Image (cartoon, rainbow, N blue to C red; front, top):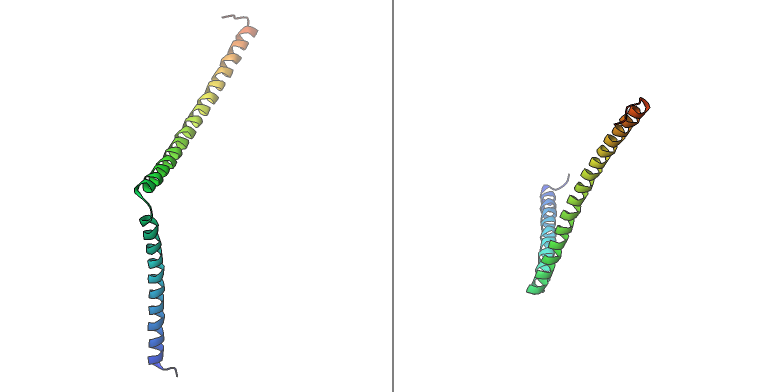
Length: 100
């Protein structure tokens, strides 16, 4: 029969190891982030903010230009259908002898 105390010690040790691994990962990420941000000057941060703003502006412009192009394509298709129907009606009128 397994020793219950030994089993409990093993479980506690596994949980402690898992907790310390997580703490190690978090401290590595926080430490690296702090070193990176701490190493940046105000002008570096402003440059990164400017780049981020440029990317956001580019994405907004792309999105709304795409919407505009879709609207114009739909409007052009409707106009083409309307003009084709008008042309067919005019041709039918010419065939029937009515000249407007």
